[in-house]
Image (cartoon, rainbow over all chains, first blue to last red):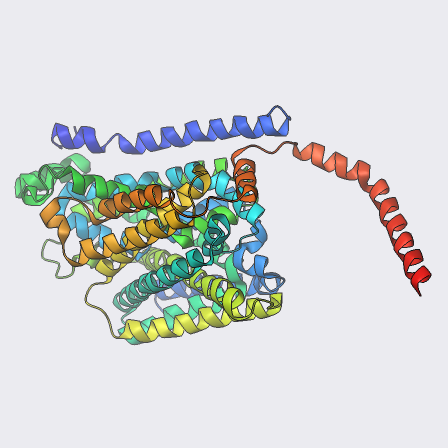
Length: 42
Length: 524
């Protein structure tokens, strides 16, 4: 685990992936909203 | 001339050219000068938001913190890496819509118009001017220090050269110059940090080797509770460390103004993605370099200079030159945003609101330019009398601004009940708590980070305060609903309807003109 104690590894290392995942979720959510708005489905 | 000197001069000239390029366009109107005509696309919005947020702290304070506390410091990076995602997702669309519906050009004007009371603008202007100025001074000192170390010039001379460049392009090109220079600076910052990061990674033999070596020196360097377990079990401190940079940006006037300057609400989604990717490449590396510094330069006298020391001793040449530009980019991109925001608040929220209500567009732009120039000169004079700690001052100013404005901005678009009493309580309560908590070092006694304490008081202030005083008017409630909901018509529909109605509109105008003419004739 990169030479780190388990506590440090699991509390810190996943965060970059969590943030990018959240950004992708928000991107597609907003894209769907924008498309719906553009098509007049709102 | 050495390579780093040539690269740095090219960088400075590029910034000046961008400033001059936008000078004519920016002079067209106050909206152009102060908000870039609300025309920024996703890439520029993301970069200007992030480079404004990432100050010289990232190159000096962050590695110093990791050098002192080990892996504990990365808590700050975790919050910071998600800051733009949270900020744009929570405020982005709603604040863009509402600021346009309210016709607000400055983030403080926005608060007054949303909460419908002049006192909000007075208190907001005082808090923001004082703490933006403190923040500017901290950045000026960082700029002078960095440039003096990297070029060998005296501190005062470095300060004057570096800040003069910022003042020239900001005064000339206004918000557009600030935003587009930030775009260039963002690319240089990430290239510099990633370049040095890769070289340091190879030098220490990878992350596992780094951690093993750190563990051999002191196993507590690897703990999430800090070296010597300084913060053991203090979740209030850890939570504050995460929150200050993950949600704190929503309270900084010079950052939230980026929501107001976006081209449209559709800009938000692209900006979230670009900002998130840029963050993951940029934010963690300075902390890791601070950890590498424990191994590579353990006897360094000033840990704030770890990154520059690493670059110049281990990787001289092109990367050191790139790093000089990257450090200055981080400092300058924050300085220019702070300066233009201070200028905006002084010209729009003080001069035009309370001194000359009928000021023409050209006068407002001129006053903005003079305020930026004046603020810059005063900042240089203050920075020459260097305060004891740059980063203490930067974090203090950041925390106080965040605590004063975060709750009002979020409540402005999410709470129908939020009114001016609530806003005043939140601003004054949040700022005062942070000031008291920091100056009396209550963190050590309570185990609660000053930012978290200020946030709780500000939130309580908004909830309780909004129960008193006048409720939001019907027009504000209508704007609130409009900013919450999607547009009723598509862009295509809007364009078609405008095209279809154009001949009728022309005929109606002609008819009205004719009618008013005949009425005038009948009276004459």
